[in-house]
Length: 245
Ligand code: URA
Image 1 (tube, rainbow, N blue to C red):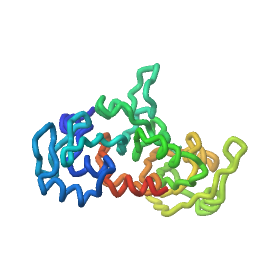
Image 2 (cartoon, rainbow, N blue to C red):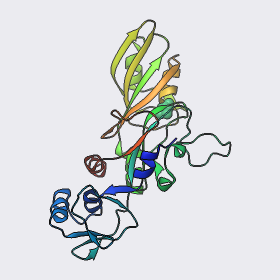
Image 3 (cartoon, protein in one colour):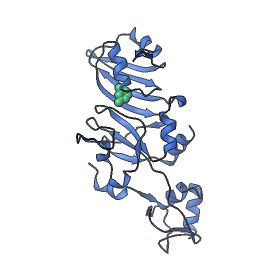
Image 4 (cartoon, rainbow, N blue to C red):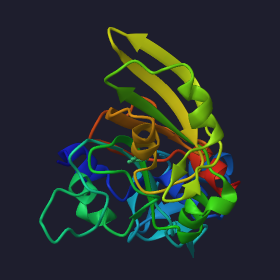
């Protein structure tokens, strides 16, 4: 569930970030404007760049009202057991149960299976969703895959070269690492497609059962150390990298 700290911070931006994300200035210039006393919030001058601001507040620079940033970008470290959908008629737990209500307008960028963990990007920026999910853009995704038997060396080529799923060959993939330990294996796999249950089905084709699957990276954005079940807003650099796709 969402903790109170996140609840308080949801939909709130630091004044400096509010100004830079609203597109009127750079982050550095926003700092200068604030420190110079050119910025007011609800009629009062604010000279603290980290002052928290909500979308509905009256923010002005030299008296001119600034519209709140339009888009929200966040990442969630999705735990197993949550479905990537907004409403589930069978009342399963959904990823929205892990977000505050104020963020209910964001949509998932692609899907993770109920039993998959890891990086799920969410945004209300349709263009970014389209770019990250459309096959034309070839966006790489990195997964950590655990199987409960040893991975056979000769299968690497098969996975990397492509396998048939629903009569269609998967695009070339890359296995970045393989660790074999006490009868089971852990692999790092990079794919560009987002077909349904793709990783599980690729391994199933070769007779392996995936017992743990976690997405670590989606395009330029990495999961990093975000704790399981928690979300955070993307940093400006991450948003910039997504927009550059
Ligand atoms: N591939 C899968 O099999 N499942 C996921 O959730 C993501 C990729």
